[in-house]
Length: 229
Image (cartoon, rainbow, N blue to C red; front, side, top):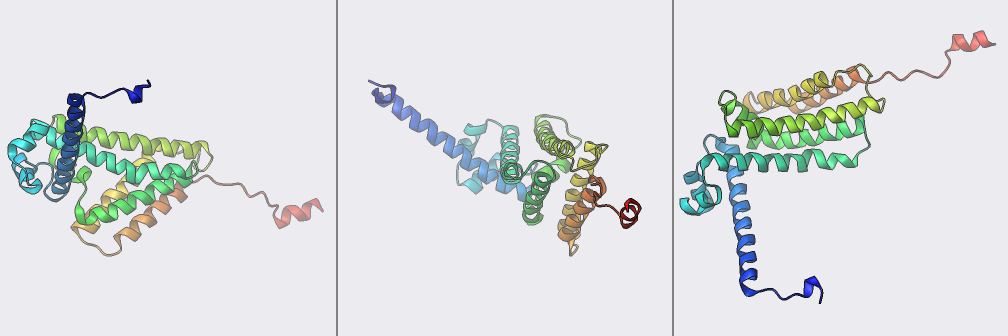
């Protein structure tokens, strides 16, 4: 008899279903919490407010997290997971180097264009927790650092592939690209400046052109051709 053919005790089967149902319920609560946090911020998130949105009791929500702080951290982690799934992982199908960096920025811009209306946890969270040490701030900062590390690595690969100049400072280029996203949120979401998305895309092209490797012209100039003759 194979392992898959071994009989499962009824109690174990019920326990497995209960665990799966509990995980599904928690995932649904986190999804609702993320939607609420994009509107009112992480600081405005509470067990009571979430219970009302999710149609559950406060004790039911509390049982899955244990504290408001753990709820906030779960939302940060979920946001980071979705961010990677939408922005980073799809770009891995692009060629190494500058094509992949372009794909990442395009995905980032696509997500940002949606978050202009819905809000960005990274940005709103930074405002709320910039001067408030603790686990929630560390979860936020850690997620952003992880994302920056992935971007920095992509820039380094573009250098290695010869698509960017060998003397490019990865941290400086990353700083400027990230700055475009921050400026876009401010201009489009707060000031509602028309054409902000186009300006951000133009800014990225300017950065790429400024840091791009200069490809030598292998074609002989007319003067050089005449000298050979």
